[in-house]
Image (cartoon, rainbow, N blue to C red):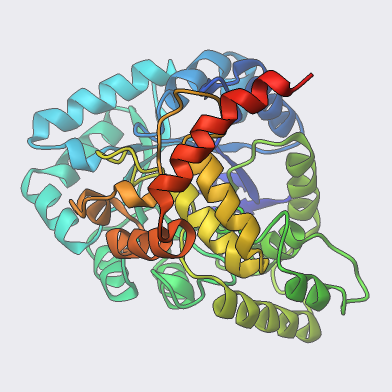
Length: 402
């Protein structure tokens, strides 16, 4: 595995394993499959694993499997749940809980989770810097950093506020000028802050099935690569990047990502290849309706709306020009029809504009307004009547099935 050195001398694999989107079974982490995936990645050189307290049972699961030689082989990264911090004692409480969850005596990289200027100032008043430095002195954490989803000006202010070891930013070829972006990437590097990357595939949008127009662009290249390969390669091409964290939950994707990370060194993409990215970016910007990565930070919705899925189906309509298909998917999946009688409705029409999701969204989307667009376009007039018919017919159809 290609290694990239941090300012503190750590040798970090160019590819990191993100544990936010581990494979699931019946709504919970598929422990057997996830364990084998993580062990495979580690055995093939991946030595950086990222998680967070708010990622459900991710920390506890990693604590179960990263024992003995596997703990020794990896650098563990997790994050302080800053939104739960009301006083300095809370910092100690959550750090101790996270150490217990992870079944370890120390955390290699401990980050303030999703901070901006105002949150950092609030935390500093509570003594967060003193707390982190004390925890580092005691050996409970090795390196101090922050993850970030705000604008570039706020990013620079946060970067200037402390002698950070590292930062974690969202970055991909659609986000060159979003959030911290390229400007923030270069600014952090100029200050000696190691830069780690999340969402290199923008929540999977840039990998897997992509619009036909994008496929045609990649096919112009003499070297044939998958869309995910192209996306990951673009990030790894930047010399300022230490590690790209991919939320891997499929065996073939893990193998492909390891291959790309092994062969993509800084400044190795050609000028012709870089031009293809600009063309692909133009297509996505024209087709995508909602800039959602599917991170799920907006969930759960108090009204039961499955916000990421609503936006996924909405984008599907425009990216693949599948109007009727998307409307049917919306009715079946979000209307509570698919999955059997009694399944809860989760469609956009349930939104009451409470605004809770807006504060939680890393992309700063006006979610209620966008859900209104989804409800109007995919639900349309008579949606309740369509739901009633669908739910009435489903039991009949199930009885007729062999």
